[in-house]
Length: 461
Length: 102
Image (cartoon, rainbow over all chains, first blue to last red):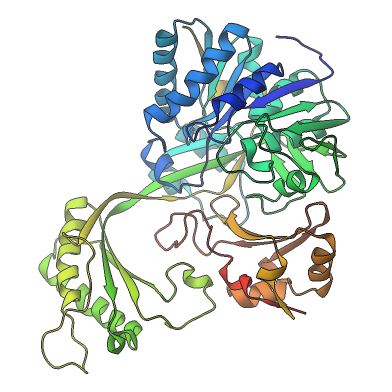
């Protein structure tokens, strides 16, 4: 690939690999001669399940559909393809899953290329040593961390910066698949390798990592294109029916970011507070004034999940005004009596928990809900049984659903059925339940440590 | 007086990572944005009151180029945790929609 260019052109295929994009938009983006094509494949948006279980959010077919178009168009043109945060969470199983799909596609398409695979799953022994050395630092609202938390985790990943992409491309890779990567690093790596001013680079990367999210009206996921230089970047969606305005691009810095003016990356912080946004056409926007400050210490953000237990869930609706008037009280009484019934019936199940959610009261907002009363004519009760095994959770849920169904209120004399179950059986098997257990960064001594802990492998396809 | 829903083009909430929640109130017209911004109604005190969080944990940012006001708070439970109610954090803006703005 070219080096020391003064302008780098980048094409984002989509905001999340597997969620799709329009082929026509992508082909138009290819006509604009990108220096590389990037796609983010990961997110913590879906909650802790993907990281905890090691499974990907989307189906094999969904990933193959997107990757097929990328590889078919990029490889023959020798345009590097960079995929970050493979298979949602970027643990080794996610990386392997995506690499398997890429191998199959290479055969199917009859194309040959050098594939680089970078890993980001954290070795627990290494992390414990870093923890003991005081090199694991909590971020905002972080849960407490000790070595037992590290031991309990099913998967821990470190969010990489641009390095794995750089190492892979310097070694001649055509296609790069990485474990967990900061979304922006996928797009910052190539311009940084070419020595472009990091301010515009990281800002452009922030816009592109979400695909077409920075257009005025995004109807379906799609591509985005940017030209980045030392002084500015220009962003324009390839799709003719999409457009960017200064406001739509400026607004994008707000999206899923607690502080809109600062974006923390492994190697430093992007500051967009002095940026100016101008239209260069009715579809393209030029951004100047982006600044990047290098951090004193290089850090990687950690993401980790652990198994909490297994759940079975019961949904039941309530329509009777007599019961709705005392729903909180009824739920409290069912919970106490139901727990006693479960303990008596299953003394061998030591750790179980029954949880009741009331939709129509505070089901959506929980502790954040300012309205503390039930005003509607119906409510939905969600009962969750948590236990150390699925079998135990199912048994408890079956017991509690029937117990709650007929649990009396003093106003009615005789047997009543309180819950309207939409499903038979009333109990839904939810499977294993995970939780995020870290919001920390780990300090890295030098690039050698990074390379040693998070190796890259190459294969010729 | 007007309601925030009649002034804003978009009111939304979303996770900012699994441990933080962020709320965006976005406007089409600079004058409307400035009116709401300068009225000072979207304050740490308001968000603290509406969302039952300590005011020092509320971060309010006026984003002039985007014609937007942002409020960020810690999530009471991490995304997808046992006590969580909204994995994406997408429906936590509800209490702001009918807010009265002078």
